[in-house]
Structure formats: C-alpha cells, structure tokens
Length: 169
Image (cartoon, rainbow, N blue to C red; front, side, top):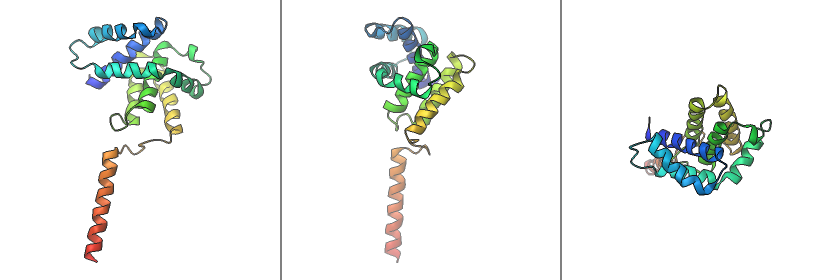
C-alpha cells in the first residue's frame, strides 16, 4: 500500500474511532498514535496522518454543513460513521489541502477507494456523489490536472515562442 494511501487509511480509522467514542478532541492524539502503531507499524513518517486528522477535526464546523448541504436526504447523524468520516477527510483535502501536493481529483479518488475498502456496498457511489458535487461547486479547480508549476511552464513556453516569432519577423 502506498505511503500516502496508508496514511489516509490510518487517518480515517482514527477519525472513525474519535467519532464513535464521542468526538472528544482531548483523546485525538492518543487515538492517532495507537492507530499508527497498530495499522502502520514501521511507518517512518506519520506526519501526514497527524496533519489530515488535525485539519479535519479543526475544520469540522465548516465540513459538516457541506455534507448536509450536498446530501440533504441524509442527515449527518444518519450517515454511517465510516462514510461520514471518509467524507470529512475527503472534503478536508478537497477544500483545505494544497492542490500542488494533492490535486482535487486525487483527493476524491482516494476517498472513493477508502469508501470501497471500509464502507458498505454503496459507499463508493455515495462518497463520489457528495465530493463530486462539492468539486463542481468549487468551480472544478485543476480540472485538467495541471499543477501550478505546469501552468507556469506553459506560460513560459508561450512567452519564449512569442519572443522567437518577434525576433524572426
């Protein structure tokens, strides 16, 4: 399992446990540490797990209303604990993440894979639907999967071509 995918898996399991045990923020660090040891023994750098969990919990007051808005037929307390926390994690990466580090489509695909692995039969479709709606409402950032560096490279190439044309004319 790739390191980032494993980190997301451990983060989701930690959020699940935190949610299931009453959403007590003071227990979060202990839960994450235990889950890294149990589910990712030997993981050399667990900072991505901590980042994901802490960002998700810190922004849950912004994230949870988005789930309710994009899945109005499913009140948040009726969404399974697994699906709810996969959505929280995916939305956190989609809205608060660094697009050069994790492009939006990667964040969505990773959440769908977690849903397929840990959720029920229709979890993947449900997560895809909610995250896809949010992605479209955001204006489909990086729709063509071009990073900022790639865009700057294209702009530079275009300027160079204009300079060559001007010099040759």
